[in-house]
Length: 252
Ligand code: SF4
Image (cartoon, rainbow, N blue to C red; front, side, top):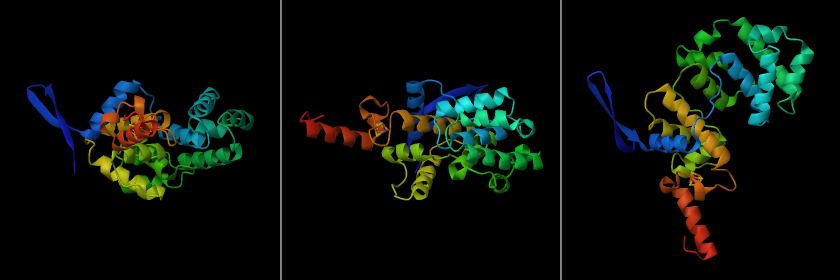
């Protein structure tokens, strides 16, 4: 069920647009106010593919360093990466961390696919089933990476649910916890999607802020509920703090 919070009004010409803001939009808004502007994944499909390959078993800092080095070579288009000297390519990719050979193999496969299908960028912005089929052969994307590609590079309204979004979502009461990652992620995705407006930007914003929140505040082992801007709305956070209060005898 779509949970409504408050009414947003805006004047467009003479029309008054009145829409209920859902609980999820309100939570994402609170995260945006708390963290400020955050970077989003690249919008260009090839660069996003490279970004995904560099991100596996890496950190955002190392991934970005490798991406910046590839940009300097330059090797951030399928043709320029195909032409780039192997040594320079290796030196750049190595900045992302271990598994350099795996990353290089994945990049080679991706370069071939993008070069063989020059219309790929336009086609993935078309009907969803065909878009899914086209990106399926891209290595190392997985389901979440594929959803990020569809949302950020192809303008489809699909919420990518990585481990962080899945964890934050469940703690906030979206979806059903399940030991199987895919099952939990899909239930969180279904529950959250019903509370997002039909706007690609809203889906992008939700992913960026919920995933960042899962990385820095709502962490797996030790979420920082005491400073979390979502505490008032979070059943798991309230339970956690009240249990801690009982343990420490403060009654908090
Ligand atoms: S209150 Fe705690 S559990 Fe809830 S979202 Fe915030 S950090 Fe996560």
